[in-house]
Length: 348
Image 1 (cartoon, rainbow, N blue to C red):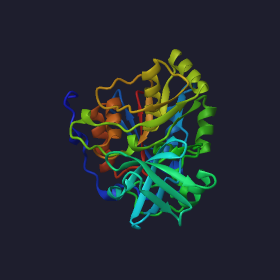
Image 2: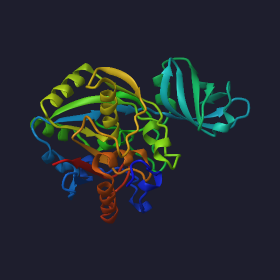
Image 3: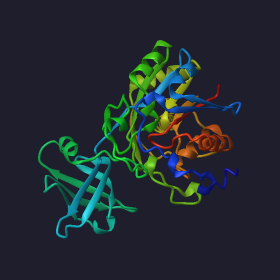
Image 4: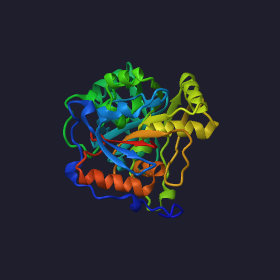
């Protein structure tokens, strides 16, 4: 692969539709887990509950504690009654949200969308490209309570079955509300797994990245380097930074749960040259040729063809090994995407 001439089509692969998981397993820990040994190239077929055996005393496990909000709203345009769907992506300032709009061509500057007989209204205050708009939310009361009542948790478009328990699209450690999508690698964990890891001497650290378009928007350019990432907001506490800096100084392993945790760690490191307490926007795009600074391994789900996420994995483990692993996953009928199985990438 020529890393100076990367094409989006290089990251395509054949995936039978029946391998796209439509519902989560009853047991979060029951998913299959492919262990990818990045040094030797060996692949192991395991289950997620085996993950504890791959950790050592002193390891630091980093997780993204964001929580998905009921970010999808269905309303009508005042004056015409045209149906409008909003997906809340990120809060820009008090009551102003950047949104992805279905039927965006009907939304002009000043357009007002009404939800549930006017209990909530959204006035367009800025028109952006590619279906994005900024809206001023108009309501009486507490916005989060209104959103809980009127909004829906937005499942990915490739999931066609209704989710009976919305908490199955949340990690058990979700805490900080703000995401439009779940950090899905974390869906496999249970409190019992974390207890076993801590008993083994593993330190668990929380960071926050609110998942938005930067994570899930499809590539729209064939030349990889021309793709522009959408901004996402991430946070790191002083406590987390101190633990991570000490682990780094002592040569202990830092292992991340999911691509959003990785993006947070790498974004902070790239800005400060170490881990640092901060709140920041990140547009970091990781693809082959990128040199990682912060992690020694990661757990991740299987990602969509031609996505920025599969490119991130290739940057860590190498293009040939990742494509070999994905072919193996298809051949062995692993379950793919948000509610599917997972992959543990390790140098050991």
